[in-house]
Image (cartoon, rainbow, N blue to C red; front, side, top):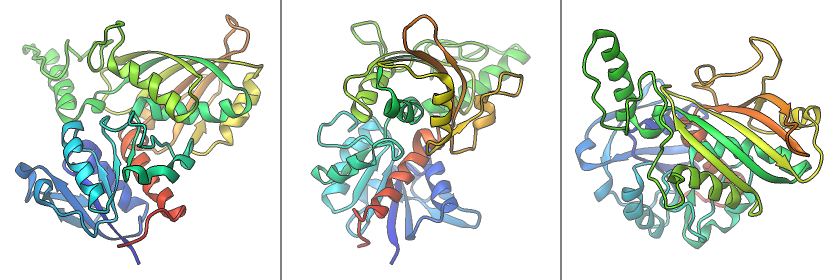
Amino acid sequence: MGYKVAVVGATGNVGRAMLEILAERNFPADEVVALASARSAGREVSFGDDDVLTVQNLETFDFTGTDIALFSPGSKVSAVHAPRAAKQGCIVIDNTSEFRMDPDVPLVVPEVNPEDLDWHTKRNIIANPNCSTIQMVVALKPLHDIAKIKRVVVSTYQSVSGAGKSAMDELFNQTKGVFVNDAKTTEQFTKQIAFNVIPHIDVFMEDGSTKEEWKMAVETRKILDGNIAVHATCVRVPVFVGHGEAVNVEFASALDENTARDALRDAPGVMVVDQRDNDGYITPAECAGDDAVYVSRIRKDPTVKHGLSLWVVSDNLRKGAALNSVQIAEELIRKRLVKAA
């Protein structure tokens, strides 16, 4: 018997990617329901190559009999409807930031900490981490297993799709405006994003960091190891899809670059492309549409006793959001933690 699956926020970037990936991976669903706000109800969204789903109104939808719901409607909407769905017996996999640091909600990357799914029943909600955190911990996990990580310093180069469709439209319109000498309006970002970079993602906090930088630190500790120190600088760049990260890692014991490279090659979800020539690394443009976390530029950091530097790239809409959510659902089935209603 197959499962009944709901995709909440089905008209957004991540929601559409969730539907695409469910179809691509032949997820064992007898029924897939597309949900969004009342203003989107009645619209049609694609499911696979041939099927079209009519969007239903989230606010009036009864989740009774729905086995799994993949949520990506925004934090405020998830705060209201995710607990409602969970109380109606549906396992919620939430892609927003609403529940990530809730001590009763597991924060899961299947390649890193699938064992945490075993205690999802506390609230019947599972949180999907921040996109920038996901790709980093996938790359760090195999290294941490052989030489404990003490400290991580990361600088991110995050695409505009992480801020939604309106942000992608703003980059497109501003870029076009530069060439036709139109005024460059700024609505989604604090400054012009076309031909620029913005070291400001989410709100500023009292210590001078942004909330995106704080998320990377606290989420890494919750997922991987509570003793790892993380310092992040998160930057929005004029790229449509795909996040890049320059990751500097300090270990508690020696780890040479060849051993690290071999461990990464053997790790699930990781692709190593690391030759010291013009084609020996991966960029965001090359990873868009792919599922892997790509690791390149693996090299020793001579400024600390046990240090390595990495370049980590992934499609933030797929592995950074939609794919990770679907993989969590697949892992629930593999571990027999969900039964078809």
